[in-house]
Length: 60
Image 1 (cartoon, rainbow, N blue to C red):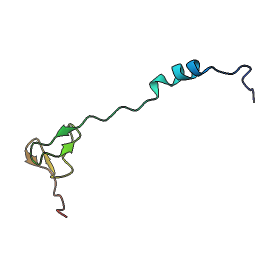
Image 2: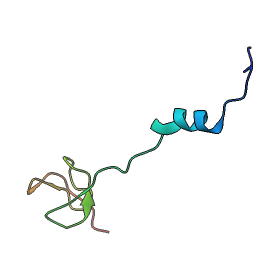
Image 3: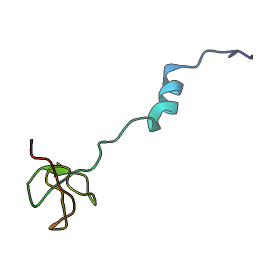
Image 4: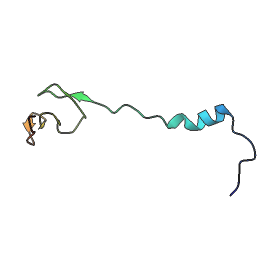
């Protein structure tokens, strides 16, 4: 297996890693229960989507 001939500098390593960062997922407020939920998804807290009940949620 070949080994690197020269050491990579810190700036070169950082340039390679510029696209490796994670972004914060988008979140919006549910109009029914006012909890944070992902957009275009059923609210995991109340089970509503676009003002309609989609699924039952255990209230515990």
